Length: 418
Image (cartoon, rainbow, N blue to C red; front, side, top):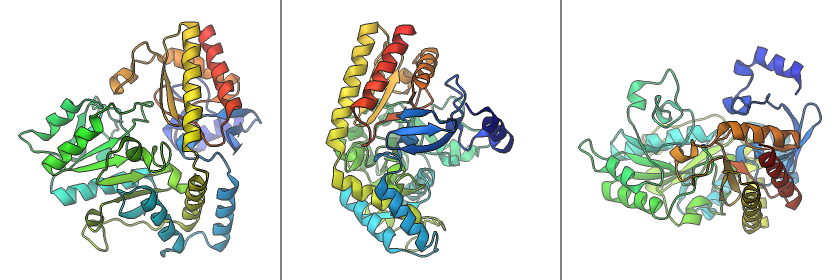
């Protein structure tokens, strides 16, 4: 750990970080401070290298500093970093996303996934004339006031929320269709929308059980609500067309982030033409942003998605992920450790519990002390996981057998010594 730089960060940055997840508070270890990254590896300010399974929280599916992306950024920055006008790149990126995700007929770019989620909720309320929003325990859709809950809600909570906004949230149980039905057929009326991560990723990886997403689609159709899929993490990661392609359910709106910026800050909301027509200047739902569709960000996103589509890496990522999952399960079996390995494509999580993890409640049962011991041993062995027992880890197209073996060996050693 670079103690001097860590101390300076504590002095000049609120909490020493610009995002709480970077604090490493739940790991029991000091936070890393990164200097550089290349491919599947990241280097800290003291020169130590780590096989990286955090991958910027899933944003860099091609691997760090991919040549096509870095060259696109260089060219775009040289041509001007911001114009405040529409660019050709924005049109091309929207076309690529629309071609890959058939539910997206029109798109509006934002500067973050949080902003995209806020815009999607505003659209849903405008289209339905309703206030209530159905979210699911363990989900995270950004830090907007309308997306956070109070203590005990099952959502990330915060002081300073407007009661009118947090009071409009209804929190169901992920993978429980009866829980969702209860919030539609009520005396107070159905919600404006159901907003759901198809694969929970911010409480660790929890895949949908058969029939759950299909039931949400049926409920929204029956009660005239919008179905909004949060694909900030899963978009272009678990399949070419995202998790909605993988699971075969079509939403009314989709929220994007992470990968569509090629590792730079970006988000978007897209969906049915008539819904998107409600956005200003065409319609009466206001959204604006000087940096939305920033030309440097768009160039990075275009390069990333064009490279992804040319490489078509999803089958290879699935195979590598399956290998990792199998080897981790074998390591747990060999050591007798209570370990659950949840995986969807190139997303995976380790839960230190004997129970299958199918929702937020079972995810929270993970043994946090065992996670801390495992995380610390892996870090010492040059392996970086997501610095939280309740977050997703990621493979990229730059990962190979060597990085997977390094992780599995580290976990086996940690389980043996735990």
